[in-house]
Length: 221
Image (tube, rainbow, N blue to C red; front, side, top):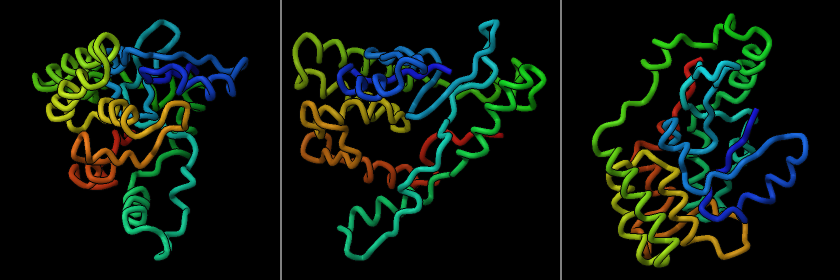
């Protein structure tokens, strides 16, 4: 098992990588290349690749532990937006235990596992990439280049366009929003309230896309 962090700023991922070392191999993809290669649109997501380099499961949500937020009591004393966010989190499909068991089954049985898909099944389950999504990828990449060469302000218009063209791609959004909402050296701000710059927030976009039940790519196990 290999973990790849998607982050323009490697320093944001280093605490997690150092905590996993030396037993768990971890990499940083600061260019978001695996987004393009495998159709990663959120985190955590995973693809399964066998010993021969053959893709046996396409990109899908890949939690293996139940989030603590799911069991958190939604108290009326909490801020209204936090109550709403927690409510949407509780609506997200929960497949952590089933997904973890599926991985163990594949490790044990290999190609004989019921969870290892045929090539035709992989193609059928892979997300299509319409022209707008390809354009979004180009806009996001241009924004990365401008962020590195000209600064964040030059990148923002292109990242906004990437978000418009591919609204279901949360890696594009969360990457750009983190640069706005998280002070240097601080842990990532999960609320990502970026209305002043992007006119939205994580919660606003979750609701706009149909709520927590539609967040991510639910594994078909």
